[in-house]
Image 1 (cartoon, one colour):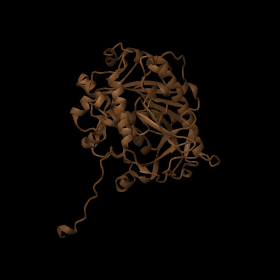
Image 2: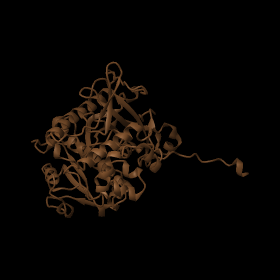
Image 3: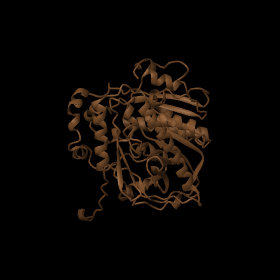
Image 4: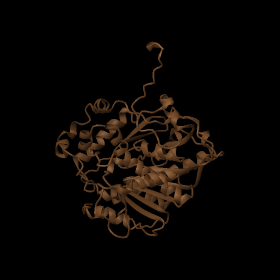
Length: 424
């Protein structure tokens, strides 16, 4: 065949890794009416009617990972962190911290161009508005992001879970803890919510606990939203301009045993939400930052797993986690060796340069993709075992293969805990 007649393979845009489950993942962004104390903003990830291998053939439906406004929001959050580094955050993995602090006031200048120069335009391999699979009703997970993040910052986790047969509703918190968010007023004017910078006059615990209370309410309202989406009698209004048909979710969401999950600040949000909202039946806490609830006295009764990275350790935080390790048959805590706090977010998969990742605290000894694969399969394993969903033998095999980097906490202090500092 002549060279000029040969078919050319399509050139895919830059993207996060494809999901590992059997389903291609659909998504919809939903914002309900009301201000941040009454409405909710969420990205819903779900198993679609398409097999996962069709994902690459529908790249025109992939969203950009973050638009320009959010990229600037992330950098401004970093500027706030560098200006006054919080006592609870580890600094060991940040090379050239002092140099970064000097240039912090100028970091937002040209940050969009620098991000795209380093990484190109990054997409999430999820399909906007495609039909949900109607094989069965799908179990529900409500996900809470960490400080300075957003509904899409954990796309790898949420997409992977959805590809294995879950509906994941990732809330974007609008209490000032995200890097940036927004809402629409009654006259349809878009109002931006920047990250809240704590002043020297702010009492940190009081401020974070206040945010925590609103975050819990947002998780409860997200659960209400998902229950309403599943109902054929309750109409849900999506005020976003590019909204898709929401009727596909009718009778497709199994909300009988919903799961609450979250990372860092979202981990604290998950724990307190379990206490406040008995409709949630399981909790997944990823590297939980428990400072915002350290003075709260409560004891949730649901099964809980704590999945921790190795670098995000201090004795006060771990001691607080251990208070919840009652009922050993329903509680579990593990550490992933060679991992850092930011392994749970998408960014370490986006930045390819090891030098850049070391500078911004995202480099881990264990490969970032492997860390997330272990994390996601630990999440699925815990949910499946508690909801009697059946556990895929290949999942068990994967976890067994990586058991050398999975450290199970017992009633005695582990080696990684012994290295924890006494900060916070």
